[in-house]
Length: 350
Ligand code: MRU
Image (cartoon, rainbow, N blue to C red; front, side):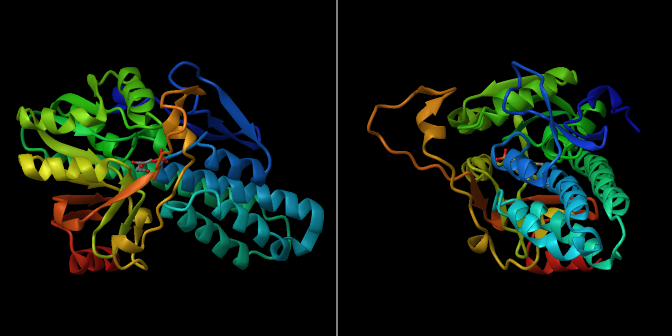
């Protein structure tokens, strides 16, 4: 197997000195700053304010947030901690609406809360949060192998948003496949969409690739179709925030646009996501809640206006790519080619 470790050095979330530590992704690539969190409300704010972002990373962070909530409730309410924690979990769940990993992680922690007795819950909940974190990294490594195996011969690939170590417990989903495939000599170049308005591609994906010695070329989002037309790119590889039961995929705004261009130019679309991103309770992409973020994110950059004064903005943070445009969904449980409801059900029942 190819040695991927030289292309995997970044971790954004850690539990150190009994607190949660998050790399502040809003400040990258200019500043590398780690922030410490000791309360669940601070953790909910960190998710909402994009200190940490990316669906699996949000889930892992929320799990540690539940540990902090339980610590505070046990200190305050003693043996009654489990009956007073619910409001904290609700606030955590309200931090961002689209990434289903957030709700998945809170529900998994909640299930343990309801099994625990009246004693101090911190050690058991921390062990569960660490398990969620470690399982995510393991899932990413497995998806890396499965996704890389789909790339037949060395080629350039395009990606959207940031789906790497920063967006997950570590290694990454789509960027994990890119790490594995690059290590195996199957990728010549990574083209990263800059990903307006938060510039996850320019600030984060490009930074991760440079840190981990993976050649990266940045492009303005509007340049993607023209790039595909040149014929060099064979795969568009993206992550997801929520996949519906019929295989429709919600991901960073601009993914749908890129997927349509890919279909037209014969570029294949690979969606890489752990099964914690699959929401079988949602029948199709039409039902996925799409986060709407402030106009100011589009109208200004670093606090400086970039638009004509008086203009309004429309700022949906995600879009939905129909399953019909997807060639492969790669999960840690296996690959679904040309996804549909039947194949997604089979995957999730396995
Ligand atoms: O708004 P963000 O930065 O949280 O959006 C992130 C994405 O859309 C990612 O593509 C998605 O979460 C998959 S990451 C592994």
